[in-house]
Length: 176
Image (spheres, helix red, strand yellow):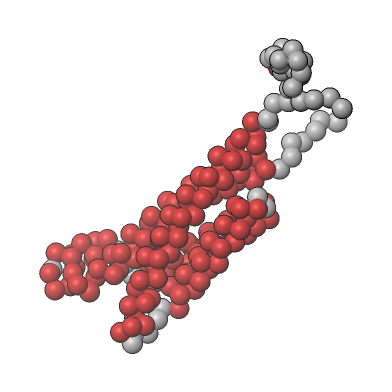
């Protein structure tokens, strides 16, 4: 058996002259790592947006008022998409990331439909905000509209990131 340390000092092949024979990590693996970390941050931001969406629902349940079905549906789909997205990100599963992409997009579309259903227009909102008495009633609607706008912009970034991540995760196509 050979000992690990030779009497001459440095073992052969480790003096730096073998650099041309060493393997190089493909750049797509680095892009996957960067995409996964970016997606982690985006999922955290989406989770905060979902918490903001839950506030009006919790307040309406607490006050004994009727819960908006579209808001509850959007929140349920959003939470489901976050769980699937985090699972897909951790395990690098393209199929789960696709489900996350579709579910989070559906959640945003349902949120936008909820805002349009509530007839929230900014002209009416600005007029109501100028009246101090209506300000108290319109705070939640303003919060809801801002949340949907932020969620929509965030969703565009999520779509770009997930598509790039899925593309880099798939093995490269070999030319025949």
